Length: 208
Image: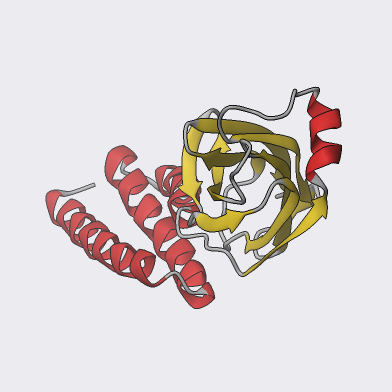
């Protein structure tokens, strides 16, 4: 590849990076779609710049698909209480009263297990909140992190709520952006209250 062509690719990549940054700030579904496309274009440009051929562009586009995944946001969210505090105490074998707020994830799940790019995934975190005597509620933060090959590719916006003691089911829905690279992805479910913190994992596969 000659110098003039390389300079052109660099310019495209730089413009794409700026556009992608702009998409990440708004967080809408339309921005997810645009961000994924820009990510693929950015990756293709970088791949071609490195290798100087079409094969490099294809490899770069797959990398760009991961960049697009970073703009994923929550489409829908809801949470409800599903168990009493007494039931949670029996479940975890804790002795009441606890001396500080405790959170425990009972189950983290996602469905369907296999999706195509552009399809939706439902995420659910079933967790428990145990409170010390005299405390009626606590501030709880729920977060989901997307990973591939052990590396974080996206962190969904955290949800902060005041929770009473008992079991809670938090459910969210995301859309896998177009051009997301096929493969196995991990969702790390995170719940935090004060100094108490717990995680669980679920898996989904993006098919080719």
